[in-house]
Each structure stands twice: as structure tokens, then as C-alpha cells.
Image 1 (spheres, rainbow, N blue to C red):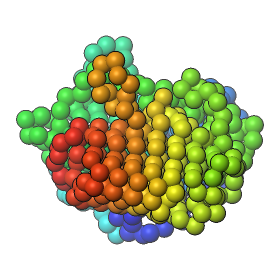
Image 2: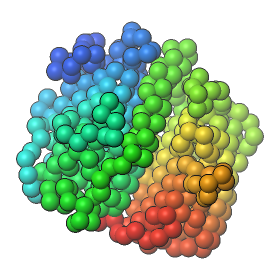
Image 3: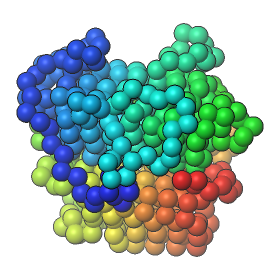
Image 4: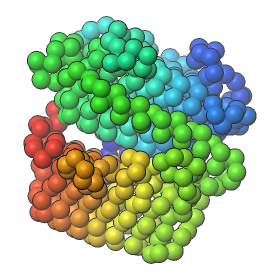
Amino acid sequence: MRRALLTGATTSLLVIGTLTPSAVASGGHGSCTPTPDGFPVCPADGSAETTSFLDPTVLIDGAEHVSLGERVYVGPFAELRASEDAPISIGAESDAQDNVLILGSPDPAGGHAGAPTGRQAEPGVEIGERVIMAHGVSVIGPAVIGIGGGSIPADPDDDQEVFLSFGAQVDGAILEQNTGVSVLGRVGPGVTLPSGMLVLPGKNVTTNEEAGDPAMGKVRPINEADVAFNEAVIEVNVAFAREYTELYREEPNAVRGVSVDPGHTEFNPDRDLPRFAGVEQAVPGFRNRVIGDVDLADRFWQFHSTSGNRIALRADEGEPFVLGHVESMGDDVIFHALEHTDLHIGDGVRVGAGAIVHGGGRVIAEGIPDEPTRVGNDVTLHDESIVFRSTIGDGAVIGERSAVVGTDLPPGTVVPARTIILDGEVFGPVEW
């Protein structure tokens, strides 16, 4: 669904071109191209402490025009589409998580969704160091993210990260250092999001005035909690670059299909295999990625028949994932969880294309353990819907391109399409 909306096609046949292993001169110190000889480790012979890792499902068009810095992690089914006229560079310790889409230039059939309003980025996509592109993010060039700007975090020695949350979009815009875009937020063509500003959930920022003035209701200043959260996410994904590299070098098939998580981290020390109907299985040839401590009630053949394509159920950070019998699961679905949290899904759940369910504890009261993320029985999650840090009651329906964040949703609740539910209240519509 998301790819159809952005690229005008329901499938994407992207391949890595024929290359010779070489660094990209314009990519800066330590950069590399993801060549066929080394894929999925970049560079192929680098130390695991500094290499970048791309999940084998990543699709790259124009790889000779893609540059990766050190310790970059690129998750399952991400797409990078570059060209000579529209290169893509990703700086050190950045990450492009599951189903992220980076287009060096707009799709000729679709173009930008709005007219430019300010200064323009150079052709292509330039992503600085320590930029987080969370699950389902899309970046459309010309765009610059995480470079320039003068706002400093609380501690001047801190790095200035950028966080793009689930389903967010940067379309032809410039995001300075120390900025962010919340869930299903967007920054449009020609806009510069100034350092120190965060786009609010679901908001569509189309002018520089909206980007820089919290009084207009679309942005707020970044705070210390934002910075702390970003730093924790970056630490995890840097660890993924290292540990997935190590796992691949031990056993190449262990990073494909149904497989173990890499383990060997403080937040997830053990390697676990997924279980189907109680039986551990590794299926490296499976079209989807099911990783780590995922416990499915269905047998493998049942899940095979009810699930679509480009699905990532990734229990390599938080665990376990416990899934009841799956009614249906569309393309591009993502399940993940923050470190030290788990995920529970009931029976008869229908998961639409591009939906994201992300575990993460909710603080109920001081001294009381966080509430886990749960989706009850017979729940319907429509296309591109998002659930984060929430419990969803039995029989609830989450509308298309809606998000439920930090909320205990009662049984039978119907969330309309394109609606943000935040901390138990209707925050507003998704504006784009």
C-alpha cells in the first residue's frame, strides 16, 4: 500500500547493479558502497566494530550512487533508490529501519505532493550522522536530514540526533540537526525544519512559518526526554550493525527468512529461534523475516498461507512476541519492540498492509511496572495503522492510517481513519 501510494506501483523490482568494491569519494571518511561482493556487510572485509549491515532483503537501485558511513544498520525490506543525478548518502551511526523508503528524487509519475516554499536541497538525499529513520518512514529527495543548524541540546557535548518516527515523511525538505518528526508527521517541499523543533503527530508542515513557530500548532521544542530516547535507539541500532555482521559471518543463512536473532547484547543477550505451534524452526528461504523469540500459535504452513510479502516480525530487541492464530496479515507489516519490553497479539487478528505494531512499556504510576503492549482477540488493524505503547481491547478496529499511542483502548472501540489517539485522547487528524 505505502509503496503504491509513493511510487505508483504495487511491486518494486530493485536490484544491486554490477559494481567493483570501492569507497565513494564524496561520502567522506569511512564511507562505502553496498556492493554485490560484500552485501550485506559494508565494507565486506571491515571490522565488525565499524562495518555497516544491510538485511539481505534490502532493495537497492543504483548502488554505485549510495554511500554508507560506519556502523549504519538498514533493516528488512528497506528500499534505497538512487541515481547519478540523485545520489543517497547515510552518515555514521544512522539507521533505516524496516520498510523505510528513500527515493533520491520524486517518482516521475507522482512528483511532490506540494509546491516548494523555500530554499531547496541539492539533488539526491543527504542524511547526516546519528539519524534515526524508524519503521515505515519515507524520504523523498531532494532532501537533507541532520546537517547544519545551531540549536544545542541540554549538554553541549551531546550529539545532535534526528528522529523520524513511524510512518513519517520528509518530502523535498531540509531538517537541521536536533530535529524530529513524530508518528505520521510530514515536512513538505522547500521547508526547513530548524534545529530544536519536533513536528507533532499527524501534522503536515508545509511552510517555514509552521516549521519554526510552535504557536501555529504543528511543532514543539525538543526536550531532554526526546534526546535521551534518541540516544537509546541509536545505541541499539549500532549494536545491530555489529552483531548482525558477526552472525552473518558465522552463518550466512542465519540472517535470512525465519532465523535467530543475533543476541550478544545487553538488551537481548541470547539467540532464540522462532516457534510455530511450539516447534522451533529456521526457514532461511522464507519470503518474510521472522526473527528471534517469536512464538506463533499457527504452524508454519498456516502462517505461510495467511501472510503477505515483505513482513518483518523482529524480536531482536524487545522479546518475546506471542502471537495467537493469525486471521490475515497484509504486505509490509512490521512488529517490533523496544528493549526490555514484549508484545502480545491475540487470536483472529486482521492486520492490514503497512500496519505497524510496536512494543514499549507505558508508565502507569511511579513504582508500578510498565503496562505491556497488547492487541486483543478479533482486532482489525487497517492499512498503515500504527499501535505503539498501547493495549487494544478485544474486537477493536483501528482505521486506515491512524495511530494509537500510549493508550488503553477499550474493547469494541472504533478509531476512524486518519486519526491520532495519544495518551487516551483524540489528538487530531492525520493531515496528509
